[in-house]
Image (cartoon, rainbow, N blue to C red; front, top):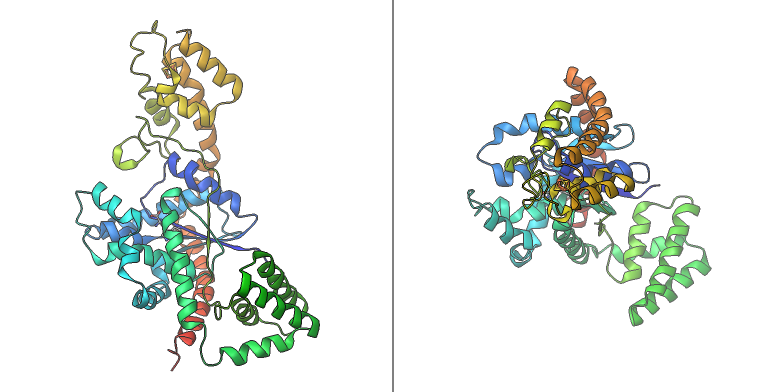
Length: 402
Ligand code: TRP
Ligand code: SF4
């Protein structure tokens, strides 16, 4: 079984090249190697845009079309919408009970965003709590990996702490000892003895090696013992760590190398800054935007040499051009051998070429919106099966199954 990956994106409408190179390209790559769950974080959009909920619906489907256009394959990955799964809200509520306020106040994005988005009133309960909602999004699918940008690393860290606390608080119900003994009873005698030895060693010395050896026994049992269940593995993993049953899995952030593509003015690409090239911009629009792009401000006349390091077009060449083209730019720019429009042409060509398959794939769905709805419907039902099971485990662990 492939490890599970989960990630979400706020529905900000049609996506731009910054989204593609910063996240989406990576999502597409991960599909083959992981069981990927990707969702539209529409509730998250409301944490900052609660005053204008109306725009969200169109944004949701525009964004899903861009996902598929970029190469997410609904057969390979699960695409769904957060708000269609009230289980996220239920887990959020239950986790909220035991989450210290200080954990949320100390999340670095909290103060950052309040400072940055001065035009919005973010002194809301929802905004403070949104990293915990994100934790619920992740934990409800027991995801092993979460591909996110550096800016979201602290949210994954919070998620890990929340999971640890939950397992600590609720992972040792009265039946824990008896269930653990029963699971150990299913192991071969030698393996059971070996597991106990590693557990003791880990408890006394914290040896990572002992932990790994113990885990190997549990993993072996999972694949070789008839009647072994996921719950047995969770029990013994918890037992091994001395932490109680692992009900919620601690995820890891997956910071794969991503390419940073700035906006037309060199600042972060963002639709609201008006410096974005959309994934589905027409070729003529792309050409117009790139031709109007800022260049090295010191290069006023065609005869002035320029410095590519001071020019956002160069950042585009770093993403889009091969080595010979980049050499041509560097030499041409610093010696005033080429003009800026000349320099920009290969970038225009490369973007238009990159967009071609996106446009083709998107066309089909734009002409037939029902098909997009259907894909989301299927994904939502697939996600629901997992989310329901986790909630069953969570309610049981908390003693809420009356
Ligand atoms: N908070 C993320 C963002 O603003 C989106 C998000 C919500 C997310 N839930 C998530 C990302 C769970 C990864 C996992 O970009
Ligand atoms: Fe920028 Fe290219 Fe003009 Fe140099 S030649 S300033 S790199 S656009």
